Image (cartoon, rainbow, N blue to C red; front, side, top):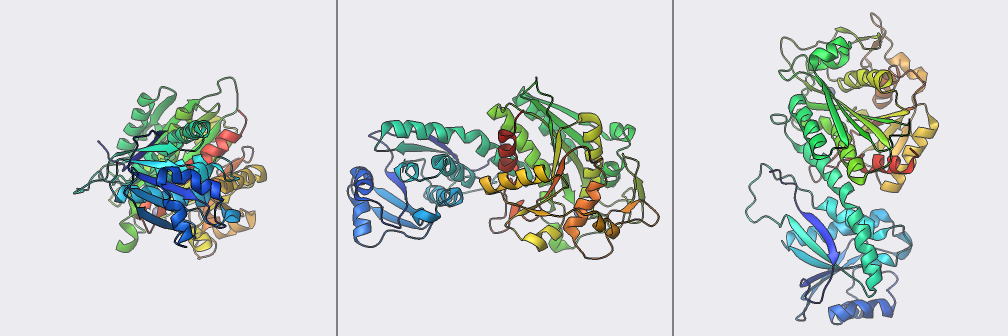
Length: 497
Ligand SMILES: [Zn+2]
C-alpha cells in the first residue's frame, strides 16, 4: 500500500487526553489575561509564565516549547504573529509548524487549544488550520525504508473553554478532510516514478478512482481511438514510447438538471526527456513531475465527488511519455492537428502544448463545456516571469480569468494574469505550416505557450490556461504541491450549477 505520510484526525478532547498540547495564539499584542488564564487551566500556568518571562514567541510561525510535570507535560505555543497581519496563509503556515513538530516527535496524539484561532476575525480559521496540518503530513515514502517512521495517524483532541465552540470547530476541521486528502492524493500520484506510472497505468488509476467513487465515470481513449479522431498532436508526442499515448476522461455530474459543464484539462507527460530536443541531465531527472497538471485534475475529480459538489465537471487528462526512439517525432515534422491546423515541430520538448491543443479541440467538440480550464507545467518561462510565488493565468475571457485570480487570492494558490494578444502570434507563425510549436527566439515563452493553445479554442467557449511550471513542486522540500486542486475546487464551489 502506498504511504503518503501522516494523517491528522480531529475529534473531541477529554480529561485523560494526550500529554502534549499545541496552543496557537496571536502574541502581538499580548493576549488578554482571560485568554491566557483559560488555556492555563490545562497548562498549569505555563503560558502566563512564558509571557511574564518575555519568552513567548512573537514572529508568525515561531514556537516556544515548555516541559512541565502536570498531566499535560509538553506545551507548545505557536505564534500566529501580529493581530493585524494574521490571514489564512499565516494560519496554515503556523499549522504546518505544529504538524511538523508532532511528526518529528513521533506522537500519535496531541491536544489542540483552538480558542486563539476561533477568536480571529477570519473566515473559518480553524478550517485553515486543519488544512495546513493535513497538507503538512504529506510524505512520499512508498519506496523508502524509514527506521522509526512517524505514526500514520495522529489524533488531535480539540480543546476549548467553550464546548459548543469546540464542537463547531471539530465539524469545520473535519469538513476540510476530503479536500486535503485529495490534494495529497494528487501529490502522491505526481511522485510516482515513470517506471511505475505511464499513460496506461495512469488510465488504470482513473478506472480505480471511478470504482472507488461511483459518481465518477471514467473512459479511456487508446491510441487507435485517438487516431480515428485525428488527435495527431497527442499521438505524435507519444509515438516514440513503448507506452502509447491515451486520453483519460473522467466525468462527474453533481447537477444532472443543469446544462452547465466545466471542462478541466491537465497535461500528464509521465516522463519528459525532451524527445530529440533532449534535455540535459540536470534538467531531466525530475521530469516525472511533468504530469502535475494532470494529477491536479485527478485530485479535483476526487474532491468534487467526495464533497458532493452540485456541479458538473469533465476532467480530461491527455497522457504521453516523451521518449526517444526510431519511432519518435522529430523537429521539422509537420503535424496535422485534430482541428485541421498544421504545426511544425521546432522543439520536441515543447510537447505539452501539442497534447493540450488536441484535447482542447476534443473538449469543445465532444463535451460542449460551458468553460474550459487547462493546467500544465508548460514552460520554464513562467518561472522566469513569476518565480515560485504564482502561476500564470492566460486567456481572452476577462470574467473567467478574473474569477480564477480571485479564487487564487482566497486559497493562497496565487495566479497572475499574462496577456494573449494576437501580436504574439508572430513569434510562432509558420513558414511551411500554419504555426510552429515553439518560437525561434527567447521572447515571452510563457505567453507563447498560451498563444499556441489559443489557436485551438474557437473563441466561443470561455477558456483559461494556467501555467503551473513554477509552482507544481516545492524545490526546498522536493515535493509536489498539488497546486490547483484547492484553487479549482474553490472555483467550482462558488460558481452556480
Ligand atoms: Zn518538454
